[in-house]
Length: 170
Image (cartoon, rainbow, N blue to C red; front, side, top):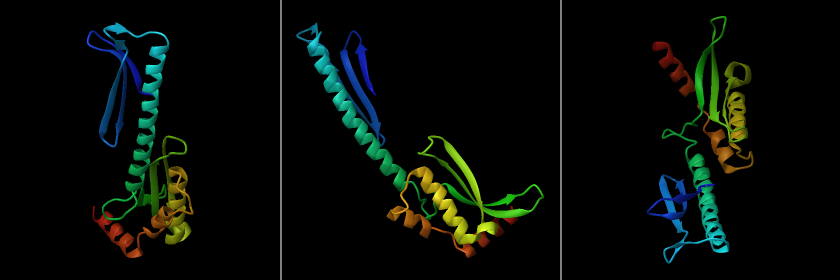
């Protein structure tokens, strides 16, 4: 909740403040009338009005956050943010191609990481497993259009080979 009681020489009342899509929404609800402090039921009513406005702003904030998350799934090249192609060096020294997933999980509210082996599952199977893990933690339905779009963003073998060559040169 972002309803705050301010008691300064210049203002006595509640302030409601939230950041929504980069814009600050800030409103003040005075607890003074005719130069005197409001008490009792009148004060409770003003507080309730401030809390209602805060609830409206909270819903707007959640919608904006959800929309920002949906639009931020793909980078400018159409690749999925959070799923990377990597050449993982095993303990034996063997280099294995994998999809590495590292994202902020909406399910457990912390950063989660995993890798999926392309050698073990094949390119298509590994991509599907990576997208399934991604969608599980981002709470994206497997029946949604977004899920289908994520599956279609699978890198081709040619792109992966080009990435492997670039990495070898480094």
